[in-house]
Length: 277
Ligand SMILES: Cc1cc2nc3c(=O)[nH]c(=O)nc-3n(C[C@H](O)[C@H](O)[C@H](O)COP(=O)(O)OP(=O)(O)OC[C@H]3O[C@@H](n4cnc5c(N)ncnc54)[C@H](O)[C@@H]3O)c2cc1C
Image 1: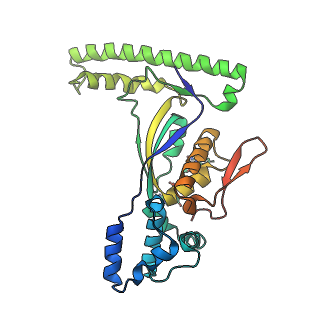
Image 2: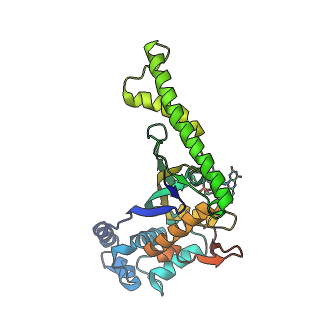
Image 3: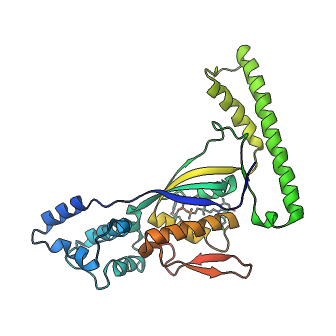
């Protein structure tokens, strides 16, 4: 059994720009070529800033301002979206995130974020948890007595889960033979699902899980603010820190305004002057 203490997050998918479509449309709207001026003046040439390009393009469409580049380029353009909280433009760009080595407590908090998010999480009904890993909070791990208590509790619930799966499988097989189960499981997979879905009731919040989350930039900013704050739970705050580092590399113009503030307890929080745009 592995014990995790560090959440992992990686970007498995992200935005691309369809330059051909953009250029074709701009030339049809502005046959004199003036519609492409913002790209040259703002210095947009590289797909690595796809999220920023699409954000700027969407914002410029609102006012058909393509022929009027801003001094300061895309950086200034996106800053100017944040100041008046023109946040809906940030909903056009998304990232696909793979989040692992996290507890079910963390994902329960994560999935409370509804607007602009999509989730797909490991199923405890279909996936065997006999090899489950667990996530230990730092405050427990750093105290030998509490760590010992926690380890005993986890081992005990893990054993209970294994015993319940065995007992339930036996019972369900008998009940099927006697015709007592109406849904008549047709396959081993279905049988195992019936056993696991009941046995999982004893698995603790500390059970490790995996989740794919897809979110747009506006939803991600809101998440960074709520879950990177000093009031957030430490495990999700660690995830938020890692996520912010990744997003800041991806798109510094969208996420670069967050600062990390040290707290007296040795941890930190994320803060920005552009809250909830
Ligand atoms: C420190 C902390 C402690 C918490 N403690 C608890 C707790 O004890 N119990 C508990 O149940 N939850 C708790 N929560 C969860 C919290 O109440 C929210 O459910 C969660 O943070 C998701 O935030 P949200 O609804 O703003 O975000 P999202 O769902 O990401 O929504 C973003 C924004 O969209 C708007 N929005 C989304 N859905 C709607 C809607 N249906 N109607 C109108 N506007 C909408 C809101 O402006 C919202 O802020 C806690 C959260 C934090 C950060």
